[in-house]
Length: 413
Image (tube, rainbow, N blue to C red; front, side):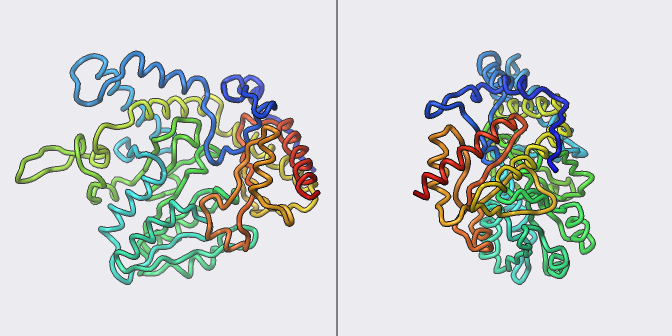
């Protein structure tokens, strides 16, 4: 039986905060169901970035003049906001990056090249995004280490018993997604971290698909590293976050070198700045940090618990509607999921479905979703992926399901 949608916010009013949702595409109202790729931006985020450029655009931490001081203050306050949002102990543990991809590469380059040697092992799961596969492959090739894969069930759930068997003295790092971008599976990362820590193995968690859907507390998880991207949590592109325990970050060498990450420079020797600046070389993405802060404030105003509850109900409703479509097979049926549904339609090409849905104004993602090994695991070339946000509605899901039925009928003629 479907859960009745009850939420503590007015979806109609929330939609007014997102200008792009008023767009007409192919003569139809825009139905945006590709939120796992990127989320749309509320007016307040757009405005705060414009306000920065119009009123105090300047470089930070160097200028003695007033607008530079204002830019520095706002940038530093953004770091504090991120710290509070994910429950870190200290602002020095929050590193601004270009996104989740750079955050993972930073750990692979800095922590990995310092701590991984020939014969060592790194564990990742079978459902990882390419961004949490390729950096470890490159590191293992360079160090002559081994990349080992945590298997998953046909439902798309990590097999914890097999994971435990893989943990041994050779493993120098576990890197796993909190939520699968393709399956929507919510992994039991707290339990996985605890199991790894019993053997003093650090864990990196890719939270790119998690922080926008659920409350994340890195201190409670006891994660050694946690990363996410601004643009997936209603903020601007080009900026993200790496959280790292101070005990890890202090002993890691810089990822890049240049301005602001130094304490002093001479031709004989350079000394590095303290955390977090040690990992933030060069002019930072000031407007990105300010936009991310505003996005997180916006989420906080609505309430992540309210968002999670509403999205869960929409996921249940969308799953019900899709189950009635002839020939559909959902890929990823884990007991714990966020608002992602990937599916295939018997004998039809996912790309064709996506292209034709666009003629109805419906935006979905098609293909392998940067998870080619996962597609191989399920023996499929790709899927159609629907990913839902709190600004979506039951009416949009109805329209999508009706449009999908029309597309399937047209493609089968």
